[in-house]
Image (tube, rainbow, N blue to C red; front, top):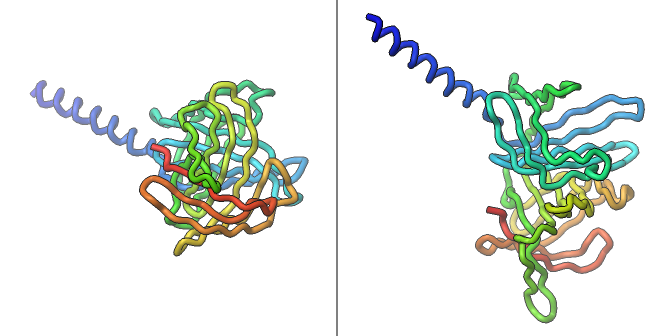
Length: 240
């Protein structure tokens, strides 16, 4: 009888442990939250896939980029822990990691920090180019010119459920060189970005840029014109 009770107790502990891990799992998606402040409405955007987190804050009207931070994350219980690769405010706050309690409720993601924020998931779905991509080179008249993606200076483009963001940064020094993002569409070799925020030039917000794309193994060949109108022929490689 005692053995049976012990077995039931152990089974219950294992079940609760398993259930805790299940409830801690955050569905991959892009989440949004609007914060009212004395300076206007701040738009918070969270991108989370299976292992990478990016939190960006910007104003829509008038357009203004505020900040962005991101890196690889893991969950333990109901804590979201991120080892940051970049933080646009690093010079001021020196933050290189974050640990935020959270919970999931009715499909929403609630970050329970000093000021709880309830993020709602986007309804946009997956597309051809969803993933994390590193700039690996360009094509010039002399052919392909590749760069070493293991070096700390990186340019990453993160695409998830109809949203895109590029970030240029240094993982060792935490230097931040710029970021921009918004929504995108990729179908039949045509890729269009609709700019929602841009750290280098707020006046570019609202512009739509169209490109041609081709997938070749792990490479994404990206051709067209930059936001300044200059021709570009870039190679991006999926990040393992």
